[in-house]
Amino acid sequence: MNLLLKYLSSCWFINNPAELTPPMSFMWKNVTFYLISGMIVEGLISDPADGTIEVLGRFIMAFTSVGALLLYERKWHLFNQLYTSIFVCENFIMTLAVGGEMLELWMSFNKVENELREGINIAVATFLVLWYTAIVSYILRRFFSYPTSVSIIFAISYFVLTYGVPMLLMDI
Image 1 (cartoon, rainbow, N blue to C red):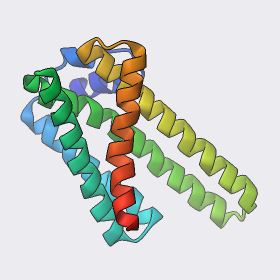
Image 2 (cartoon, one colour; image 1 turned 90 degrees about the vertical axis):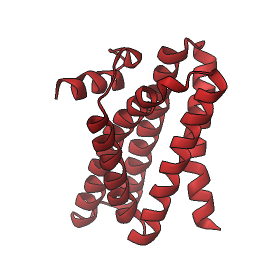
Image 3 (tube, rainbow, N blue to C red; image 1 turned 30 degrees about the vertical axis):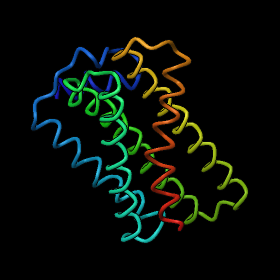
């Protein structure tokens, strides 16, 4: 639990995730949570089968992106640390997204007017995407000492690769 709290503090830009070394069991629990929570969120948004395929696509793109960056930087030995840092924070954001889905459900049941409901959903989604991008940027800056502008560009690229590409492929 202590290790999880240290990783979660990275989501608040407090702890240096590059200083944390996760045990294998923690890493695989993190991946399992990533897959299950992603499938729940995507299953609520679309059909569960499509959601599962999209989450698996994101998972593959995330591992590939992290691996490619580490190969480029010649720091492959940091793979477990980097992907765990990103996935813990992504799991945190995904948990908040589940809360956003529950808010949408509550607003639907309480017949909140569509314009207000859509505005709230867009605001929550925008906030979570911006926060997620800032977290990934922070993690990359801590691992590689990139300038802020470079880490933001890499974080946006990571987001586009892990969310945009699988979503695009699902629409084809």
